[in-house]
Length: 212
Image (tube, rainbow, N blue to C red):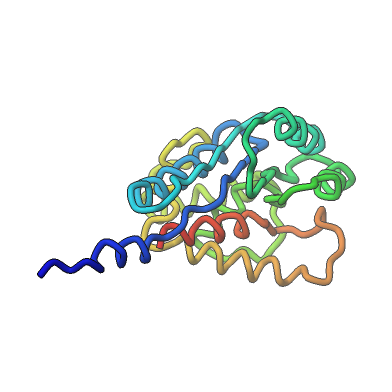
């Protein structure tokens, strides 16, 4: 006798897709390359088994912190799509403390900020960083970790950056390391002096649920 419950059980175990995500990045290469590959992984894993295909849009702009926040608002106002989650990804980099803090304060959406730069997030896949870093320091440290892990030379325009840094289950390591880094600054009011620190882990932790 045919099992009439088979189809219904299959439907019941489907996992819902994430809401529409919009990720707007300050950088034009490293950040979009990382998130586009993460998006691809989600589509590969759930694209044919979920009720709605994940819609995650990543846009690299090359704008500075405050301009990026204004651009995001304008982009959303003009877009016909409704986004369930909006993230603005940017760095402290060489911007003043005032510019950086204002960007976070003015942002009406989720801020995926990094201090001093996105490389702190990439570096956290290999180790937890405790001492303050300049943007050049974080680049040097990341290059060392790439060499130690036999990943070749670190390049900002590397389209395979996600696969390289998340190999050997390092994604969970990065999230945990950044949680601990973030926690050490819980009593610090100014994000501009939270170094090293990043909130990118909050965005990636949300999306990583769809990789499991």
